Amino acid sequence: MSDQFTHFHPAVLKLVKLTVDACKSRKKPVSLCGELAGELLALPLFIGMGVDLLSMSPSRVFDACRLATKVDSGMARRLAGSVLGESSLDGVMRLLQDFR
Image (tube, rainbow, N blue to C red; front, top):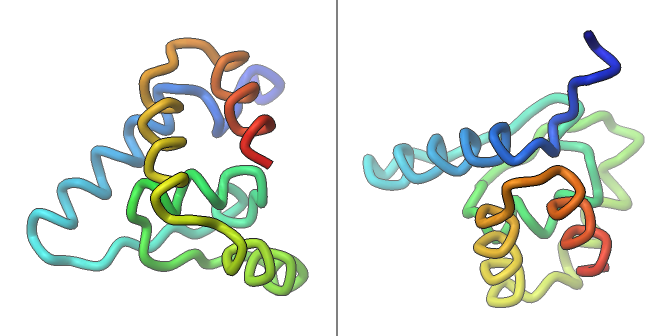
């Protein structure tokens, strides 16, 4: 079944956003760690969702920092809204890839 799992599935991303919103409403910081946190394709999405901290493999930190400085937060919020409105993995991937 692992070949059928993807952390870019709309349901997974919606759960991340629900968590972010719950934390923000309680004035708690939001951290994301693991493989998903190190996905450069998703970095603008996490910025748009309001994730505060990303914990990733040291080999990804430089590229993630470089990309983060180039991301416009307003555009990232619009991306997040569009991605969270998608119901298909293909739609999510198209939006993330087009944002580059």
